Image (cartoon, rainbow, N blue to C red; front, side, top):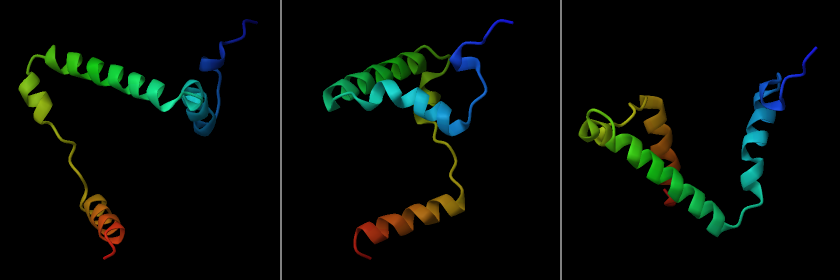
Length: 81
């Protein structure tokens, strides 16, 4: 029987996340910044090549009332309120 590559083997979500971030864990801030910059460039290129880039740039995921209330509480607490 053929053994599946590690990326296709069953594993927990936690193990999958740790496997995904492992290459970045030991990077310096400068290296991580470079990777983030590349991701932003790829996202920009994808948006600009879409049929309606203006709408894509304006898109915001809708937020639930609960999410917005939680955010406001966290911000207020951080500001000492």
